[in-house]
Amino acid sequence: MITEEEKEILRKAEEIRRKQELDAIEAGDDYGSRYRVPGPYHVPQQEASYTEGAPQDAYPAYVVPPEEVPYGTEFPPEEPEPPVKEKKRRHIFGKIVLVLMLLVIAAVLFIFLQAGKAAYMPYDAIQEDPGWGLPKAREKGVLNVLLIGTDARVSDNDCRADSIILMSVCPQQRKIWLTSILRDCYVTIPDIGMNRINHAYQMGNARMLVQTVEMNLHVRIDRYIRVDFYSFAEIIDAFGGVDIFVTGEEVHWVNAYLSEINHLMDIDPYDSQITEGGLLHLNGRQALAYSRIRYIGTDFGRTSRQRTVLQALSARAKKNPLGVLFASGKIYGALTTDMTCLELTALTLRTPFLMGYRVETGQIPYDGTWWNDSMGAGGEVLGLDLGANTAILRKNIYGE
Image (cartoon, rainbow, N blue to C red):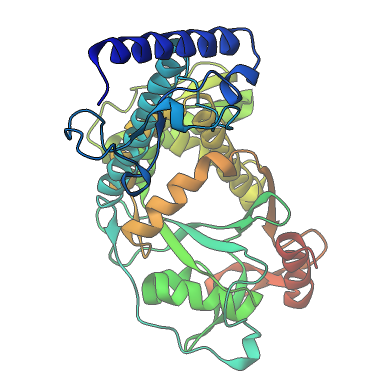
């Protein structure tokens, strides 16, 4: 049995051993931690030895007396405690990561709820003809969205497509193509016959217009988004307006169309009239009036102005993305589409990456692929070389 005096000697030996080990660690040398003065050696309970007849509290179950440990026994090195500053840094970093994750989740939920304000209006599946040459799925990852602007003033009944723009998101080319389809293009409308392409919407809404584009231009339309006069102006205002260069010649026509728009909205006809050209910040009604001008540059000039407005919207979003995000409820609320909430949310979350894409524009018919034609009493139309137009369109969006 160990006497109290022997216990005191062991305790002091243990203190000396620990001090030597700490001195070695501070000096950057682990020699002292591997070959140190023998002290109590912790081993599993079954390996501990007891002096026969000794009280159980004389030796803890997991301690071997130092005299039974051979000198020079190699002990496993003890891991030093991390510095206090490092612990604080890890704690702060963990909090930052948690906050960022919560912000991302909140942003996704916010966008999803705002996307639910869009008018969801899918159409029945289109019976495709193998002769259209459409793929079963998206080609080369390209997303084709047909943007439709109707000329509805009061309701959506019996209105035509005043603006038809094919927006193609091309990830392989890192481009977004905005291709206007002029409304006077003389094409075949399924089950109807030859007519202006903008009449397809009047005869069968978005479904008929999508079917007409697919049949004549041999590209698959994945989704559509539709706006009318009023919702177009609301979207521009939700973005905070757009910056557009207006020529002196265009000023007169902007004001003329603006008077008509103000009258439809029960506003003073002279409200928001512009006095001179230049780089102007236009509100929703002014931008709508600008995009409707067709007496300068015919319909080719009008569609070019429409694409200019879309490009100005893109520039506005890049300049103030948070402002657009907070106004997303108004933007979505002005849309009618066959895109679900999940699809709109996914497209919105993809927007920061799409902002790095180049925006290219064009129009159908392309130069040298059309001629002036007549549909009898119906007036003048644009005859098309559909083969040439399809080839150029596919080259642009698919890189063929």
